[in-house]
Image (cartoon, rainbow, N blue to C red):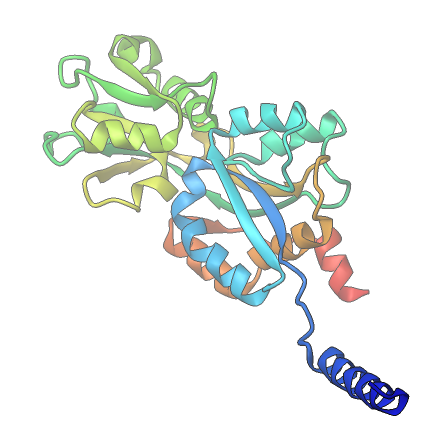
Length: 273
């Protein structure tokens, strides 16, 4: 091969290589994972909310871990790789905050709900409230386990307020969390139960007998915060802000939540900067 031919081939190769480099499509960065630890009572609402959030934030891939609030809180204390904590009681976040495990300025209360007395479809219609309950009328009363669930603590407060705790205690059967209590009643394994309204509105297999008076238990406020193990802090802030948008608040109300006045936190301050 002559020197001139070699030069021409080299120039052609460089031309092709340069063209190839200019036409290779840019590689998109993989979505960052946002890991959320959420109470079981939020499952139905999040099934609608999370796809909307991901559609609006295509650079974020959400991973959710469901469980009882107290169990999730302990996992966070032990260093579980979580970005956002969504318990069923804001006090669970307060407890972590006292231990310095909440990122400052991210804690918010975004919704509330009430506690209700529920019954299965076969339960006598003559019972309309907790005051109608008598040991002879019920075999099993399902409540959350106060040791593992927030709803169990609130149910115990409601029963003490109603002065029925000691009379009905032999009939108690415990569920690990609010959804477990709902399942016990809907499957006929318990005659009545005490759950959050957010769980009761999700199934047609049970009926709500009564809403607990507001002064019969501590307020049920749903809180959210980014935790000390968070790796995706910007994504956590975006999600916290998203929970307070009007469309999400409407969805939450459809699932039995009460609206809470928005608070100023780190996620909102970021938008105003």
